[in-house]
Length: 314
Ligand SMILES: Nc1ncnc2c1ncn2[C@@H]1O[C@H](COP(=O)(O)OP(=O)(O)OP(=O)(O)O)[C@@H](O)[C@H]1O
Image 1 (spheres, rainbow, N blue to C red):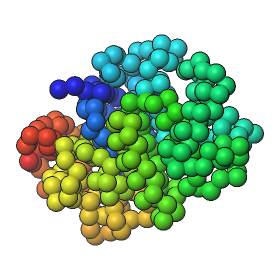
Image 2: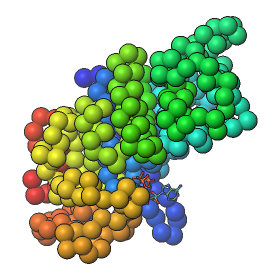
Image 3: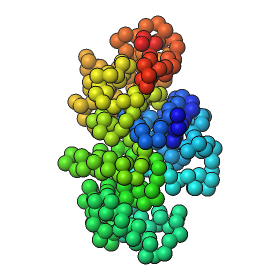
Image 4: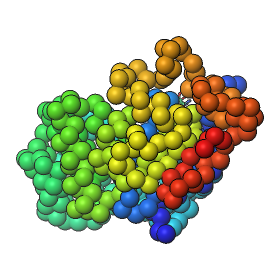
């Protein structure tokens, strides 16, 4: 099988006295053309994984391969030639653009870093890309403060697309937008995925986004992948891990800005996400927990083709 991106035993620890295991042995593979949705509570390590994969930060341990090349040990300069094929779309698109630049100049700067074209060719490429994300090319003369939230996120997507990347990491690409605009942006992500043959890593709190855009899903808890499914239809009915079940049951009700701690059915605070415990990271919250769960870390094992779960009890 051909993988676009693969991580092996990826770890990222922060802090010295009090260590936070933001990533704790993450091994996953993303096939070309099979976008992966990454979900989990706030603090579970999703954005850290996005930053590490995209080489914005170095892992503490582990390997990352992208397009058959190991990248975790590359310097920024060495990674440059691959950067063109791996772009990131952040949640806060306003922060991506320098307000003293026009949108066109910001996008051109990205393009100029990688391609030597004539001024006319730069302008044509920018116009074409702005059109492909549903923006009037004349918006390139404005600065970021003269765009609406939806236009700004489209411009942000254009900035990522201008280099025609193979892989795009989208970190909460619609969560800062009004509900009415979210669907439009998700539709756009789907359209350009088809048009340009892009594969996404979609980091999101919103499970419906995963089914809409992705063909596979990984569920994270305390820096670990606890469940992986090679299929995103009716995910809620297919998940098996006790944490995934809680996540699926609780997320539609939860306030997206207040999810750092999940409450059990008795509404008691049961677990701080960063607390490090022995054995399975979820045992202190699991109703089915047995002695083995407190002692041994469960492997992420395949229980059906395309379905992996890290739980001693399945
Ligand atoms: N630079 C850092 N220094 C110290 N701790 C960090 C740093 N970045 C992240 N962390 C910690 O790592 C853990 C994972 O954070 P991360 O932002 O990856 O989670 P997340 O799942 O993306 O959360 P959210 O959905 O809220 O964005 C958290 O406990 C966070 O506090």
